[in-house]
Image (cartoon, rainbow, N blue to C red):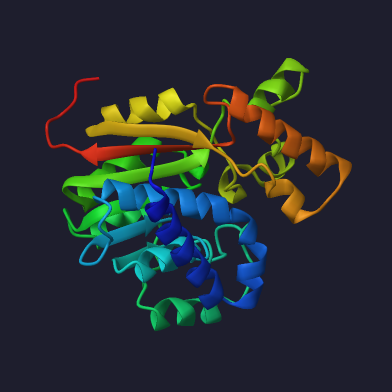
Amino acid sequence: MLNLDLRHRAANAVDRAYQAMPVRDASQYSVNRKLYVTVLEQLLFEMGGGGLRGKRVLDVGAGRGILALAIRFLGAETTALEKYAFDHSASKMFKEGGEEDLLNVWRAHGVTPLLEDLFVMDSVIPPASFDAVVTVEVIEHIKAPKRLLDQIHRALKPNGIMIIATPNYGRLHARLRLLFGQNPKLDLKPFYLLGEDGFIGHWREYLPSELEDMLKFSNFIHTHTATFCDPWYVVRKYVSLYTIKQSIIHLLSYLVPHGRYEVLTVGRKIEVPVTI
């Protein structure tokens, strides 16, 4: 269990990041606060609890950059690797606008933008460059997760930390949908209509045990896995009978082992090859 001091420091950094963001972003992504705080709290813990000053941290698939800003506010030299928030030629699914304002905020607070596809990390990032890498709600969008983890492994310093957070395929809500004859995945229409070239939604979601296996396959030592959720996430978006029902399911998920919406797993880089 992480201590309250780390949680308090993580929460303060995330709230500072919201205050620094353009108003539209701060409002739209306020529902993700629990996610950002949990990831940042775990990062502080993994780095020894003494803060991030003097550490180099890479946020892979940084999105609008709220987590990257929070990491920066804790003293780390922070790089935000992101393409789709700024380049809409591949897909318009993430087109939100205000990109120049967003970049100005990043630069004003010392976050280094790296506006590249994550699969060119091995050509734009020198090996053993970062003390930690975080990637939040990214791996489920990737067709080649091994390629992603292998490139992160290369970018990390020896003994460096990687934290992955992604929707949990074994969440209670997904189990209930399958039980009642519904597909646990909800994004058939964009998947079907946009196809391979335009769809950048969830190609595959993972069970906690599957994430742990992937870490081992890519030469990480698995150190921690947990599932968590914000029970009131959907109600904060809008209040309806549907969102109230969803919140009740999220609350009940705390009674189910590994049944909560989000899964977080941590790996530490090792150099010895692993035989699959």
